[in-house]
Image (cartoon, rainbow, N blue to C red; front, side, top):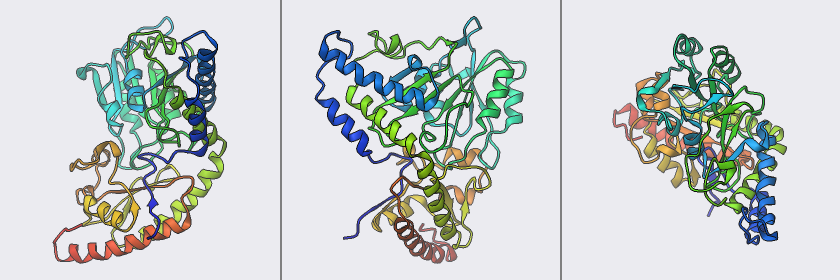
Length: 385
């Protein structure tokens, strides 16, 4: 039997060897990191070593990195109307782009009536003019923009957004979950930033919030203890945090090599995909993550195509893993005003650090096979795929 090909790295990644080793070692550390005895201090060292790795990766003060149970909780913690610059007025509303992750679109601790949506251009990049109009004249706002979209891979002009936001006296949250270890994420101008471990080769169930100096009001979402500088109660998941730190260090160390290789593989994949008539690759006119390709074609049915790839031994996705099992079209593509004929057929291929040319060629073989069936079905109007 042929080995399976995994091309769904944006959903989750395999565990890096470095993370696995760090977690295995941490399992033998029995102390509670809040305890003052030797065992407790040993556990605390693991947590703080990982905190230092995350802080270095995102360009934050390590005292302002808070570990959470993942990216979703990190976003929920970050999106609070209590946020403010030191001595400033708390934000009163939340402005999010239309293509944000569902955990951001949910609004965190903001009332639904205080959440405003900023549109994106057909390219998948935020409409800066519309954002500026939303910011003008209104009460203080927290703006939330993802650095790179999890479906299309489109990289947002976060530095330009930060300039607009700060010029108007507002704060900026950046969801960098998909960007970490794929592109640089320092010096973005973010006031608060969120990341997740399992997107970079760390364990599932660990994320982090990083807060810029001078930003206050990040009050605990989970209460009941003084852990994480009083911002997130509960005994820390020491093995998970240790694995996160190791994955961050490994990912950052190899970012240039990995990004260059994935970019080459992405080009190989997209050249082959475009051989099928009518193929559309979303956001291909703007900067994208080097590992992400969202593609569709007339007549394609994503759910059936994903099954077809799976039967060929290839794992791909029909979009965000957070939306798997749902039949409605992608909210990202709807926000981009994509051709309705393409909405039901979007397939996401996302590559990783050990994806090979052979994997891409296997994928293209399957694409040719499936697109042949697709073409016949579309020609006779059956829409089987």
